Image (cartoon, rainbow, N blue to C red):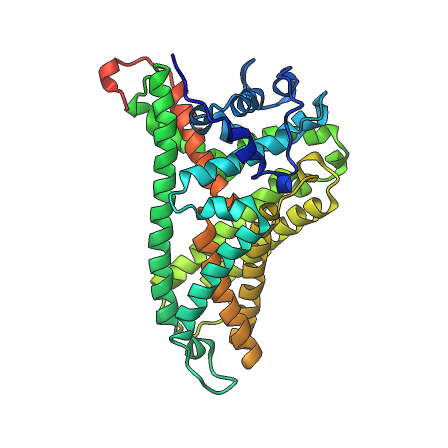
Length: 390
């Protein structure tokens, strides 16, 4: 069967990886990376298959592969590669490229190809949100309450509109991914049963929450220098802390919006306030490990970092820190300093939400989708075909 190839594919992927220093031209497809990968499941698995697709320009097949998202970047393949081709960095760059292709706005590609592009997108969103907030700013006394300085109703109105737009963007990205993957499955003759979808979805969500595959992937840490570290300092635990803390803050914010009048005073031990603060501290703990490992660059997954690798965790850390200071300012008024921190927190929080589908955090969505599609495809085909072609 004739295939359409993109001769520029490998070059485009390189611009998404390791600050432009990615080079897998040394790879001659020996298969060593597959042999040592704790998650590869067959002799032609990732990362070898992904590298080969990029080398020969098979863009459609690359974007349609669930395997692209089943890698958790433990770095074992790079550690043992006889040609120093750095397969782990390639996989990360390929995922970044895929996110850009799934994104219909084009902003993801701009943000992830260069530091300047990333800063331009960040400045664009920051400028828009700052102008929207300034439109409702109330000049008052230095010790005016925070929700008097910026009306809570206006903040929440912007937030609701933002979540709707970001949700739509994420949904379209996931739809684009599904169409790529499903087209390839149809070409290969894979039949999907609708009755198998709930089980595949639940398994994927469970993995995303419990980091099951991530723990299996990071089992290689037992053979590296970091093996002396306790479990709560392992890479999977740090990522789980970031994800769990973020979800706790999101739940606290949502329940706070639904259960109490906007801006109404509550005691420090109000459950939603405690949940949000605890979530913030847990998230900061995970971010501290992630950022320190990237700074030290002693382990394979952290040795080569692009600006985009740094940007999202720093943005999240800034949002959490300003949020915690804002919580203090509610009970210990700081005057103009408190107002400035609150303004910065709201803008950063809105930036964070707006950039979720465009940055590394989008891995959460696409990886969950890939796990769902892979589990759905692998479900035993024991029912009649009438049960279902998806």
